[in-house]
Image (cartoon, rainbow, N blue to C red; front, side):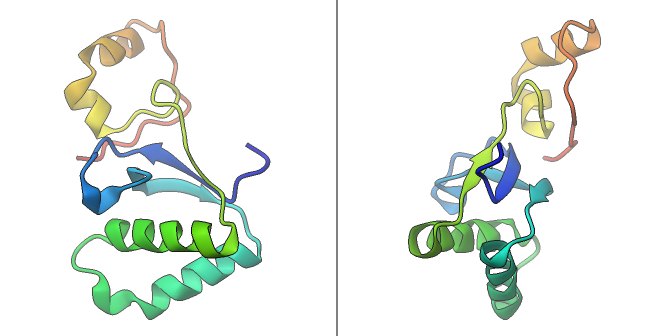
Amino acid sequence: LVGYDMLFQDDGARSQRFAPYSANSGFYYVRHNPRTVYLFTSLMYHTDMINGSHQDVLIQLMTEHASLFGLKVKVLDDEDFPTGFHYHRRKDLMKSIMKGETVPYVYHASW
């Protein structure tokens, strides 16, 4: 994980709107460096594109910055970092968590 600029939980949404990362912007890690500073400066300049959640605009900008400036983004493993998508669509994982067989680092109740 050392080589990445940003780490995200998997949002579960696989629509074009959130491609290619399907990253959940409710809980994520950002390494402070020139690439991420520039990304978030760009996000601030694009606030007029945000309608409700900033997630889709952030993903669009991440895709652009990955291509143009070498931004490195990783979506984390869903068993260690589940979200509301997993609550609704991965009953097996939720049962495993409730039994203590799987112990996630973070659970973000999105969706």
